[in-house]
Structure formats: C-alpha cells, structure tokens
Amino acid sequence: MSVHDESWRPYLDPEEVILWQGRPRPGWSWRAGENGTILLGAFILGFLIFAVADSLAAGQSGPIGGLVVFALIALVIGASGPLAMAVIRQGTWYTLTDRRALIAHWPTVAGITLYRGVDCYPITEVALVPADLRGMQTVQVARLSNRYTFHDGWRYAGGRGRDSSQGRHRDPPVGFERVTDGPHVAELCRQVQQTRCGKLPDNLTPTR
Image (tube, rainbow, N blue to C red; front, side):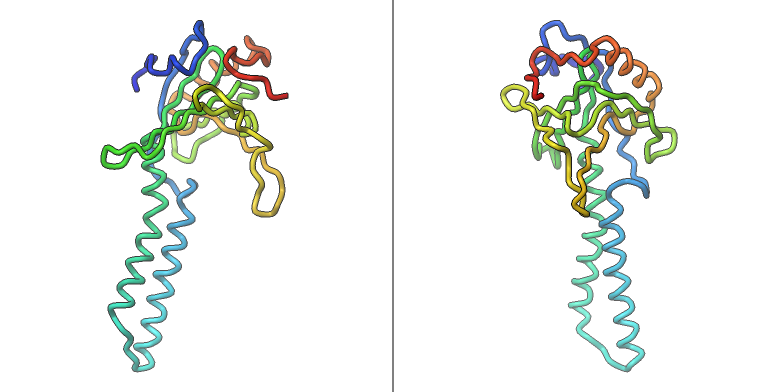
C-alpha cells in the first residue's frame, strides 16, 4: 500500500481524510516478542550438548540420530519466533485519518495470504516512546479495550483488555510501532484527539 492508498476507503466515513500512512520496520531486536522462542531453543540445545558431553565423559554413546532430530527441533523452535514476527511485520500497514487510527494485518508466505484483519482505534491518548530498534519510535494512541475490528462492518472487539498470566487485568497501549517519523505522527494524533474530543467516527457503534 502506498501513501494515501484509497484501498482503505471502504473502512472510512465518506468525508474522512487520510493524514498519514506507514509500516513498521521489520528488523529484529532482543527486546521484541520473539525472544521467548530463541531462549527456549537455546535451552534445549544447551541441554542436549550437556547430555552428550556427560555421556561421552562416562564412556557411553547414545543414538546419534535421535540427538540430531532433537537438535533440529531446538533450532526450529528458536527460529520460529523471529520468522513469525518478521512475516507479521512485513504484512502490517498503518493509517491515520482525521477520525481514527487503523492497523491492517495481511501477512503472506510464498504469495499466500494467511489471514486478513483490520482494526481501528478512536484516538483516546497519545504518547511517543522509543521503539525496540534504535532510531525508531512507537506512537501509542489508545488502549486495547478501545479496539474495533472489521467484519462486514465495524464491530467492537476490545472487551476488558487481556488478563495476565498472574490473573491480573491488563489493558495495554496500542498504536503505530517502529516508525521513523514518530514525532510528526504523534503531533498529528494529538491534533486529531483535540479536534474529535472523544467523538467516534460515524461508522462505529458506541459501546458504553
């Protein structure tokens, strides 16, 4: 999608104006969400190396084929997180209008679209924070509980946010991640927030 791509028009109000469009930088960093699979794969691989070294020190030899299989499984597990996040970021587009923020996810593998999803958020809060890549910023514009998703029309899907593993309620901020022009985008978002004053776009149904 290019800047001001009119393929977004079916998701917008008739008079809605596109102010900015962008995409997240797809690079990998240690602070991103894929680190869990890398650490798990490294742990399995390290355990295998330790077990093999211990067996050799005791004068024993196990089935090499089985160890190779487990080593390959560890490598696949370790690589799955970075590869999955790379596919997701490559298939993510951002659009800011004078009424809302939109995030589209259309990840593809070998030319096959895995799924299509478009979410939007009325801009309720604006914060500019450093992204997990140097020189990038994340522009937070709303909370997860403000989410609307598109299925033959906009439907409220935010609910109460997410529950953490400790059972505590979480409502994390969402927005445009890993963008290079973060200060400019944040200023546009603040202008939209001030202009709208909490008013929803016409094609969104109030939930409260």
